[in-house]
Image (cartoon, rainbow, N blue to C red; front, side):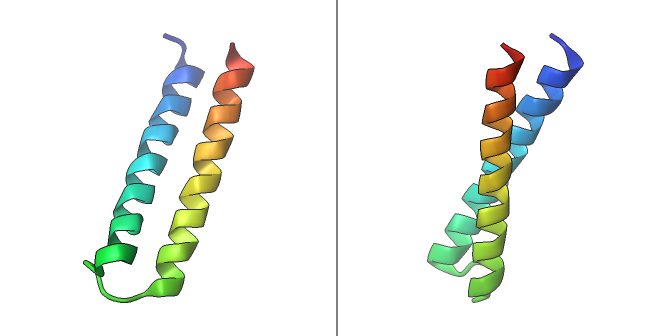
Length: 60
């Protein structure tokens, strides 16, 4: 597998984990009630997911 694909899939995986963690934090308040921080992290990770998917589609 090529290095650019490995890096892209790694970024997608990490962004997915970050999105999941902060969605759970937003719902359950595990790390405290920081609504703005949770939303910013979810939006940032969502943007990274979108960019990763677009990059995978370009690498085909």
